[in-house]
Amino acid sequence: MCESSGRCGGCGEAPVRRRAAPACSHPRPCVKCGDGPAAVVIRIGDAFCRSCFREYFVHKFRAMLGKNRVIFPGEKVLLALSGGMASSAMLRQVQEGLSRETAKRLRFVPGLIYIDEGAVCGQSLVQREQTLTCMEALLQETGFPYYLASLEQALELPGSILQRGPGGDSEPSPSYKAAVEGFIQQQRQEEAGGDGGTSPTGFSTQDGPTGDSHACLPAAARTEELLRLFDAAETLTAKEELLQMLRSHLLLHTARTRGYTKVMTGESCTRVAIKLLTNLALGRGAFLAVDTGFVDSRHGDVTVVRPMRDYTAKEIAFYNHFFGVPTIITPPLHAKRREKTSIHRLMENFLLGLQVDFPSTISTVYRTGEKLSVAPAEANSEVQRCLLCLCALDIAGEEELALEPTLVKEETGNGAESRAAFIPLLCYGCRLTFKEMGPPATLPPYVRTEAQRRNCRALMKQQIQEFLLEDEEEEPGGS
Image 1 (cartoon, rainbow, N blue to C red):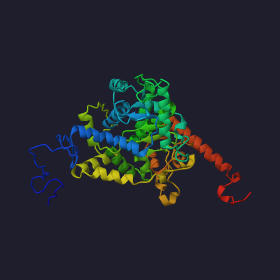
Image 2 (image 1 turned 135 degrees about the vertical axis):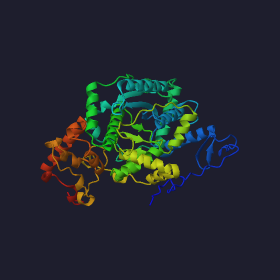
Image 3 (image 1 turned 180 degrees about the vertical axis):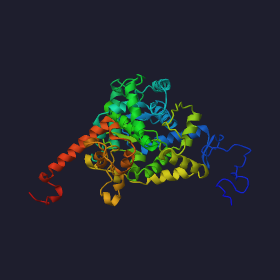
Image 4 (image 1 turned 30 degrees about the horizontal axis):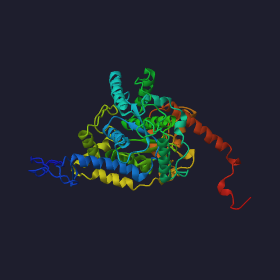
C-alpha cells in the first residue's frame, strides 16, 4: 500500500498542480477611478492603481484613529519603531498626517523610540553598531524627538514599572469634542499673539529635535547578564515571551519618564491574527481582547494603541515598495532550528500556510478577535493583577480552573527567591511560561523586587486580617 500526501497523487501519479489564473491580454482597470491600470490586487475584485491605493491606505489609517477617538489633540504619543515594514509604514502615515499640506492634519505630538535587541538575536557588536547608525539616520530625518535604547536597559528598570499607574477606566475620560475645541482656541490665541510655534503640528514641544541620540552600546557586563537570562530559559517559546515582556516594560518606562500618555505599536492584521491564536495556545484566552485589541489600557497612565491592525502584511509590503518607505530588517530571536522551535513560529507557519490556499484565513481570525470583550481583564486592586503582564488574575478558584499542574513542586530557594513564592502572583498563562524561564535568581532584579514587596504586603495583610473591617459585613444605613 502507498500513502498519498495532500499535494501529490500517490502511486507514481504526478503532483496536483494549482489552477493557474487565466491570462489577461490587457491589464485590469482600477476599481475606484476606472481610468488607470491596476498596479496591485489586494483581494479578489479589489484592484487599485498607485494613486488610488495610496488614498485607500491613508484613509484607512486616518479612519482608524478617527473612529476610536483615543488620541486627543496636543497629546504626546510615543511611536515604537522596530525598523520593520509595519512600523515604518506607521511612521510614514504620521509624517504625512502632520505635514502642513494635509487637509485634515493630525494634532498630537509624536516621539520615536527604537530598542536594540541585537544581543539576543545573535548579532555581533559591529552589526549592532551598524543597525543603530542606520536607525539613527532614519529617525533624524523625521525631525521628531527620538530615543535610542537597548534591551539591556530593561535590567535596570525600577520595580514600580510592574505597578498600575493612576488613571484608566476607573476615572472619567474627558470629552473628545471639548478637547478639540480647547485645542483650536489655544491655536488661535497663539496665532493672534504671533507665536505659532515651529513644530510640525503648530505648537511647541518640550523635547528638542533629537532625543537620546547617543548610539552607543551598553556595557559588556549588562549584555552578559541579559544573555544569561535568556540562556536560562528552557524553550524558545519562553524566550519569545521573555523578549516581549522586557520590550513592553522598557517602552512603558520610557513613556512614563518622558511624559507620553500613548504608545503606538505597528502590529498588522496578520500579526494580530497570529498573536491571537498563539495566546490561545499559551493559556491567555482571557486576555485576548487586551493583547490584540486597538486599545490596551492595562497600565493605567499609559495606553497602548495599534493603528496598523487593519492592514494586512501584503498591503503594507506593497505600500512600502511603491512609495519608497525605508525599512531596516533585523534578525529574529536566535534559534538552532528553523521550524517548529516555538509556539509563536509554529502558529505563524500554520496561518501563513493556510492563507496561501484560503486567502480569507487571516481576515477571518482577525474579525473573530474583534468580537471579544475587554471586561474579563479588568481588576480593581494591585493584588488582583499578574506580576508580569499586569492583567487580571484568572485564578478565582484553582480547583475549578485546574491550575494545580502549574504549581511548581520542587523548591530551590527560600522566601521570595523560591518558585512557589512567585506562583500566586501570576496568571494562568504567565505560570506556564514561568515554569520554563529557569531559576528565579536569573530573573530581572525589578521583577524579584516587586515580587518580594507583594509577598510582604500579603503576609502583613494576613497577620492583621482579624482586625480589618469587611465592606460586605456593613449593613446599609447602619451607623
